[in-house]
Amino acid sequence: MKKLFITALLFVGIVSFAQDINQKPARDQREKLTPEQRNEKHLQKLTSDLNLDKKQQEEVKQLLAERSAKAEKFRDDRKDSKTKPTDAEREAFKKQMKADKEANDAKMKAILNADQYTKWTALKKEHEGHSRKGDHKDHKTPQERNQSHLQKLTTDLNLNADQQKQVSELLSERSTKMEMLKKSRKDSDAKPTDAERKAIKKQMEEDHKAADAKMKSILNADQYKKWTAIKKEHKDKMKDHRKDKM
Image: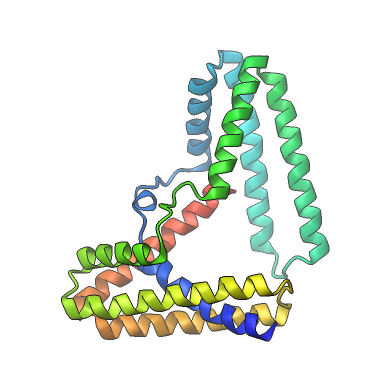
């Protein structure tokens, strides 16, 4: 367990660094939509995919609004709560999510005709499969991903040959630590305690600062300023992405 914990500390810091410097084009193009705009966009897609009539559109629109309201309430509750949920609370929440999903399916089945429901079920299954497999991923090897990341940084920051070499070493270090974590996770089924999770969070912050310091020593002032701006933009997009997932 101790070995796993130490490896996890190494991993979270370097992953945080990697997330900052590796920007995905799809994320860069992600729209910032309000809940109402997301619902309308979703409704338009369902109308097109399932050929919904006017009455069905109104009913599905109401269903999407109810879901958004629940998501907003959940976010507000999380903001207001300063304590982490217990294992029992997490299990209860998991059961509630399952119950809500089944209720939503039942409502959609009542709204759609048989053919529409069959198609909607197939679309939902396809979407869930993509989410599990990470449909946006390119299935490259760690070395290929590192090279792709390096090329993007070279373009965005106009890295010279020496800078490219140093950043390449940081990316290789990240890949090595990720492999160490994967192996350690396979070797242990034990979950970290609350104290260990807090230590991981603290270590992650320290490792993040260390990675930032390394990049600052590699880049010149203008490059570092641009890299910092890229990090901030990425952080904002990730926040929007998490909201979209609610």
